[in-house]
Amino acid sequence: MNDEDNKIIMGGSDDGFGDDLEQINLPAEILSGQSISTEMIFSTANEMLDEMLNIKELMLYYSAAIQEIRTKLAILNKEYEVRYQRNPIHSIQSRLKSQVSIMQKLEKKGLLISRENIEENLYDIAGVRVICSYEDDIYRMAEALVKQEDIELVQTKDYIANPKPNGYRSLHLIVKVPVYFEEGMKKVFAEIQIRTVAMDFWASLEHQMKYKKKIADPEHIREQLKQCSDMITLTDRYMMKIRKEMDGIEPEKSEVEQLLEKLKRFGIQLPEE
Image 1 (cartoon, rainbow, N blue to C red):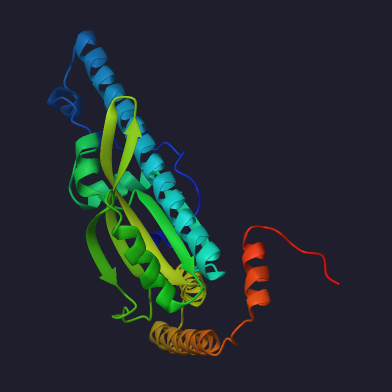
Image 2 (cartoon, rainbow, N blue to C red):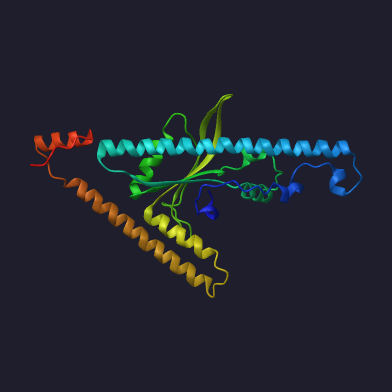
């Protein structure tokens, strides 16, 4: 999930492999237009179909990785709800990169379309975006996730501590996630973006604006977007400060109130007098 993939939707069903056959290892005779035998045509077609089926199977692994990450995050969120009566995660979004996008990224890297090249060179086919309530929740959820024994942290990019020049802020993690099928376990790459509601609001609008056809004064627009990002950052941190103050001044509860609170956590609601 790179910056150009800021719009997150469940997807990945479009098939564009026919548009880029020149990237597949075709025999020189076909590429040069020389006469070829029927056997060569069928052999090449079979190889191409095998490679496409391999890639289709690979997408299943990435889809499973997304489900693994979503499940882990949902459990962490539920744990906080039970222990601390609040949810650090506002929402979770995910997407599987489309086959067209995969081909475009391989082309940019000068690589042929193959399962091996996809597995070894593309880290963001499986993408998960976590929207948190407060800035400190971002780091709390990231730490809780990557310290799990089966999650391997590959790379961290902290655009919160070090925002991009345009004002973009988010925490990006590249991880390896285990997925299990009948033949055994396999670890695949996935990208996780973690940000606050305010950061996500800014990024979504900035992404939409990038696709406007004509901008009279692009530098002026960039400056305004940066100012908006700074204001949103200030708001984010003020809201976190207010929450921490409220957590610190929570009045001490009586034994009866504590008992009633525990009963509520078990789903038991006593009738009011």
